[in-house]
Length: 133
Image (cartoon, rainbow, N blue to C red):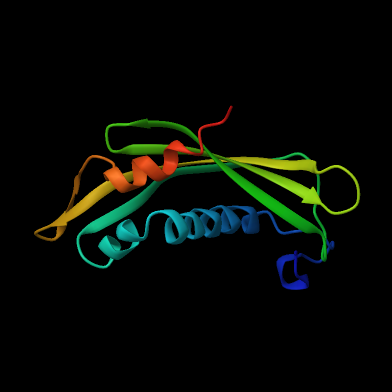
């Protein structure tokens, strides 16, 4: 549910919150479906966001209920590209209000620098269920 803190003076959701919601969606996915990857983030693994975008189709306001749906667009080498769909939900059919994308690079920490590594197998398996139909 959208909070008043997520809105601006005009009363609609401030644009940057959509990107924050993408990150939260991704983190919840990792916690629920790839806990080993989360554990590795404290040691050697880094998931570096290399690009992020959002297209706004309709405004959201305080107390609107929002469903954010993540899907896998592609994996290639050490990269994972995800799509996000934002829906206003509640009374009646869900209304698409925004679309976003995000690409991350899987890296490992070696000697104070980041080095590309393949997408961890646990993450690849978890993402396989999120390929759009």
